[in-house]
Length: 143
Image 1 (tube, rainbow, N blue to C red):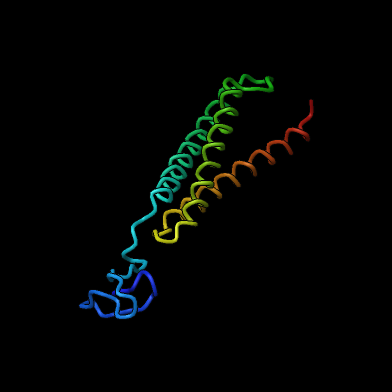
Image 2: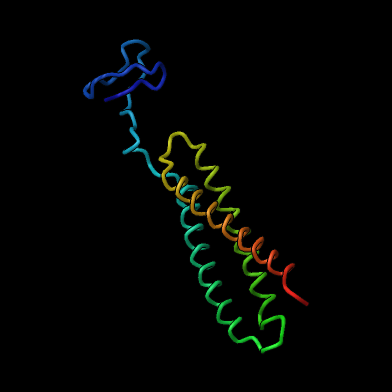
């Protein structure tokens, strides 16, 4: 099916020119033929990479906590783990921004933008939830 880019009239595939305004006809893009948004793909890839790095950082944190000296309130590398989470969180916020930007591209397929936005948003919410949980336990812990 071809569609006139000027008036929007639809014609069969064998038509060449719009009979109303003489505009050359193009094949109408369906959602299956729309190219994927590069911004959406970037959002998806960044969110997946950051999510994997966050999981790896959580496992690394568990290993470092197990190496803590009895009686100590901190563990080796605590500052680097905190900075790592904050750095990855900032990158994930960029992925959220890319996902939102891809939603405004109407001529592109937005699937990867939506997936990137969902994954990055879930990771951001999870890290913020872990920070709140950690602060709650830090306040309750006896000194």
